[in-house]
Length: 107
Image (cartoon, rainbow, N blue to C red):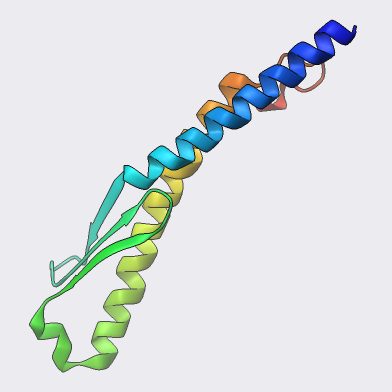
């Protein structure tokens, strides 16, 4: 019984380390998003850290329009990054979950 428990604890620790390694790797996965007309371009990591924002000069003339573009484009980029992040981390976590009776909701 304790051997199984120790094995599960070891597997959980290994899974936790893999999840952390995956999160670190996601710092290098870049997500690019642009406004529909290409006047605003944003790059962020899959960990949702903004890396670059490119603003066309035409947007600098209208503060309200620029704010709207930033909100829409950032939200789209963050949604994409969140999907990549959650998919990658969930895959690693699911792979490393021990087989515990009654806990098959993670499968």
